[in-house]
Length: 154
Image (cartoon, rainbow, N blue to C red; front, side, top):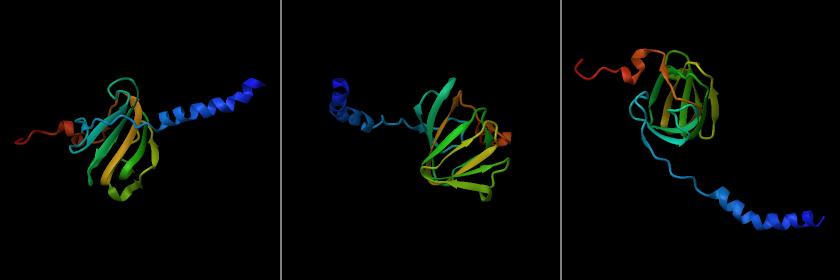
């Protein structure tokens, strides 16, 4: 009985330490240009994991207003949370902003593996994406893939 009677005292003594742990600021993100598979203009930061390796990862993608990601798909499910701005998401093989659903700060959603989808940023927008790596993105139309762009003069 004495053990249980002292438990509240122990919890009171631990409470400040537990509180300090939960309010500690996360380490700053290191932003840089998004990989070449994305249209130019986006910035990306790795939150956790390694998108280039097998296993769970989380990244944040920062996009300027008007930024568009043409129709594409991924080999794994993609879980998205909006951190800033408004992200317009549409399903299908053609980028049609009239057929999008706006996602606002705090909204979350999942796009299943191989589902064709596209997106656009309304204002400066940051999305957090969690998926299983290695990360892969296939454009529905090969000419939309920025990696297939021909150098100027061709």
